[in-house]
Image (cartoon, rainbow, N blue to C red; front, side, top):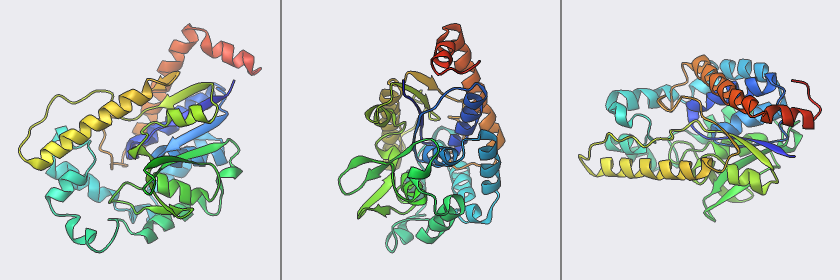
Length: 302
């Protein structure tokens, strides 16, 4: 049996993945493969290098307070969406609202993204240095979207910093990353929770962590064209995510969908939500005796 842990995208909400890893580690749940996209690729890659969830938590919390992270100006996106957007839209992809205020108009004429490539590179080096994907103590695969071919790319070799930067490259906010001559962006453009990728990599059992919403918000207002675009995008994400997560064998969905995508200020709270959701799911699996069968299969004690 080959068990894969699939970590989906969701920016700040993805910090809940750390809580998931903490509980799976405590319960001695075997993981033979990690597949991540966007923030899931970042957390998955760091864990693959050093499979110690408490060390991972410490490192990420330190990173959020670091100077490189501050240069990403995530607080700008959080403040702008919260003060300019109604609650019903604060969880959506921010481009429609920021376009409404003209935030991107000037920069889009002269550069590919709001955040400069230099800042992205500084952050990537801070986290991963010269580490390579093939050096992971747990095999790690990262999904990206190839802008040239319009397809999902699964990266398993090469510099970890480049693969993660590509998978986290939100269009218009972060710059595309060129890998093997092709421009790569956020893996979530195609696969919000890369379960199909894990199947193609030979996983027999998939534990997936979804940090997005499983419900379509019924409250909306159509005032102008950008409202229509925002609502249409919300519907697209909803059906894409729902179609993907139903393919998981075990689905963990921390209650973080109401968190602003750019709000990293309550990291410990998000991690705790990941722990709570995982304990709840494992409790159900214990009742079905599934966890015990898996542990016996791998000669692990409960």
